[in-house]
Amino acid sequence: MIVLADYGLPGWDVFHQGLAEQTPLTIGTAVILVGAVLLLAMLVLREPIGVGTIANVIVVGLVLDAVLWVFDEPASVAVRVALTLTGPIVVAIGSGFYLGAGLGPGPRDGLMTALGRRGITIWKARFGIEAAALIGGMLLGGTVGWGTVWFLVVIGPTVHFFLDRLALPLEANEVAAGPSTA
Image: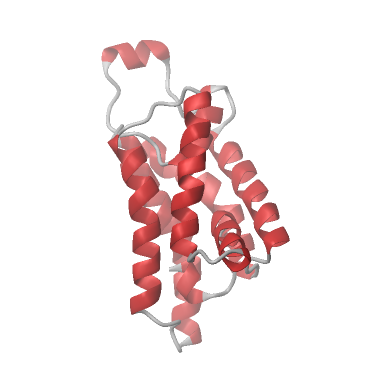
């Protein structure tokens, strides 16, 4: 949604687009390759990897390339603004559902949950990771705009909010260990 709106990309997509601009990769292929590298980081951090993790590495990049191939940037400014404003909320709801299902975080969210397991609140972890990806993407020439700032400010708190509300109930042994969204 936010990539199509073209008012500035989320931090990770600034990085993916910058990488794609510096190489022969598509933005979707960059998403897949970065995801694979981050999967290795998750192993080092001993973050749980599940079917959701592996699916995220492959599916997100393929879907992004397919959407960009099928759809053009909307001609209407109102539609572009609506896509930009609602994009992080849709991402946060999706994150709450897929992370809450316990099938393994995607590699980018795996960094966030790894920091959460180490005592950093989810919204702060998400903000810091997005900001770091944004800086790297800016250096690579990715698109930055007001939508970038909006996503950066909104994504952490909204993911935190929806993860708390959409996660499956904890099992007895998980309750004893404590929540991972500290």
